[in-house]
Image 1: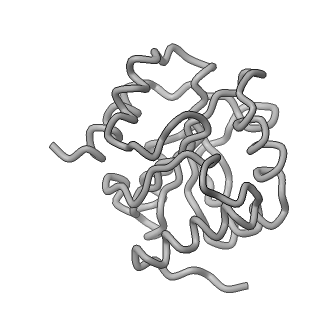
Image 2: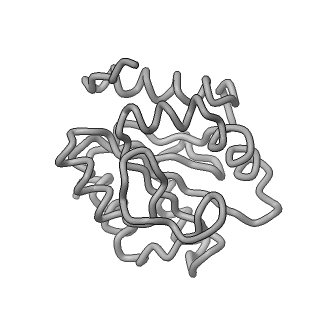
Length: 166
């Protein structure tokens, strides 16, 4: 079976009771906004022919890189504008908000050696099953909103997705 399909099926089985990047509950899948609705985001990716961004995070106070991502990148207007302009379906999965065993996490990421901790990203094609890339956004990157946008833009273009221009 396809590794991406197994990862996706495992995520669906979790139920995805997640917490937001900020405060309050996450809404249903809406382009350019983080959601806990993986099935809705996958359907949105398929109907809009947009890549699906899935973020694994740990909102606990001890996750330096997760907290830094939320504070420095996710709140940045350039990143938010990019996500909205590109109509990106985005799902946020917070490890500390539901029963997600470390052994399950290790099993999922064992297929993706570039994932070495949190926050980790799995970028799917619009089918929601083919993995375009999987990486941890803390190593070998310009840890800024511009760096994250550059990483995703290059990946989207290399995968044949047209980027919307402002």
